[in-house]
Image 1: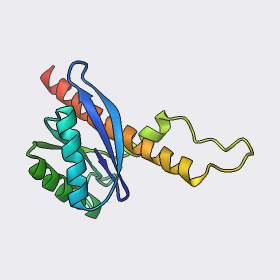
Image 2: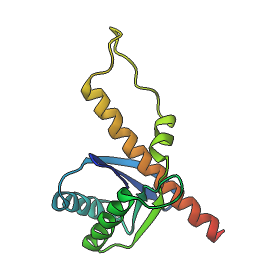
Image 3: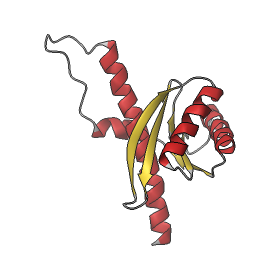
Amino acid sequence: MDLGSRRLGVALADPRTGSARPLVTLRRQDAEHEGAALARLVAEHGVTELVVGLPLHMSGDEGVQALQTRAWAEAMAERLGLPLSLRDERLSSVAAEERMPRLRRGSSGAPPGDRRREAHRARIDREAAAGILQAELDARLAVEG
């Protein structure tokens, strides 16, 4: 997962292929609503572990945002009864945005509207979550292999 202040990008791993894919972007709310939404996804998709991106400083140190993310992730993992892995997510959104086509101007040449920009940002969050999860899968494969 890619936890932001407004949105939560969610991805799933396919255990058969060892690959991650973007699933959905949830709008951030209170912990109760977020936990309920994640519980539905866990049940629907048979999730067995949470992997959450940890926003470290470029130096590798944990700042306020990382501490808040860690606390949120630990609370969600406890609520859902799942093991938790935290994965360095430095530049994950930047990498996700680079993999995606650029948001184009409309046919009139005007900048994209609010809805298109919001949809684009939501897609970036899903793609970032998939990148975080893929990095975790690749790291585990390297250790095992």
